[in-house]
Image 1: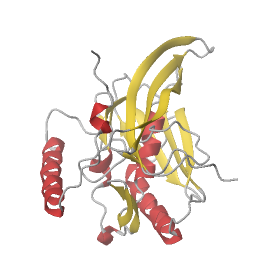
Image 2: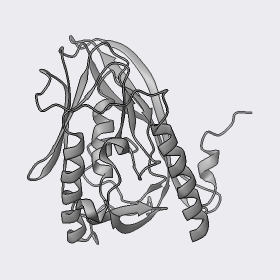
Image 3: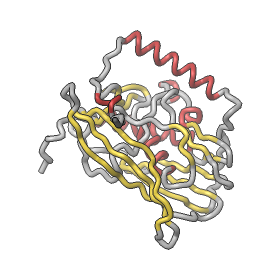
Length: 277
């Protein structure tokens, strides 16, 4: 009998006490700081203003979303937070054998550093916290990395699907959530040339590039399969999909297709909601 890969997600949400959450965060935060001290990793830390010559992949995402009930002040604060974090990452060079740690480079977002309250998602609930909104930056970096030969070492996805699709341009589950310091995004350079991360906050969009010394040798495409919405035994709905990466040569011939990951998220809205006209 085959094991249902979604079995872990088909159970109802777990509601933990405030004390349990605080102890858990302290435990995993301690483990993360020990990892950053580990000699097993060569961490990316060098930045340079001069750009490497060849763009490998670029992408941008809108800074402002038109969602019912989303506080405009939180969106403005998010942009402030993104500017501060982008300044810590822009120009970072990832040399062969090095690993980029999102939070190790940015550091802890605090009011003293200028970070403001932005929107955060915690256990499926929308709230606000200092540094909120930085998931947009980790989402962008992760999505761009999937279109390069870089290796994603660590990535976390949202456990809850909070908003219905609205003008979605990327597959569901193609982002990378972050929470300082233990929910990190880590990317390793297993190639023979340095890569450079370039990110900036424009007037209306968050813009990013991965650059390198030589032009791309192939092109990547992310495709979605087995997308479905299942009703769980406890009454809620689970959204599932699988993402694959296709590799093409520069003439457009398919070279390879590989499985990336599966996503399962508890839906916080009804899948039967009618689309707004």
